[in-house]
Image (tube, rainbow, N blue to C red; front, top):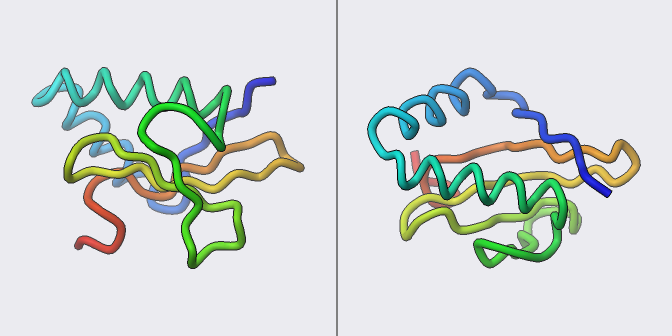
Length: 94
C-alpha cells in the first residue's frame, strides 16, 4: 500500500525549501526524494531513522535528511495520507 504525500500548512515554505535544495544542493534534494518515496511505502520504518515524536499522539514522525535537516510528518492511516509538516532544520530551529 502506498500513501499519498501532501505538503501541509506552510506548503509554500516547504516547496521553497525543496526548490532551493534542487538548485543549490542536488545531493540533498536526491536524498529527500528517496526518503519521500520510502515514507510513501513505509511511514513507520525505513530510511532516515524514523522516530515517533514524544509530543505527538504516535502519528507524528521525524526522519533524518542530513546532520542538520529533518523531515517532520504526520501519518493519517484513515485517509491513507502523509502530511509533510516541516523540512528544513532540526525540530524547533527557526
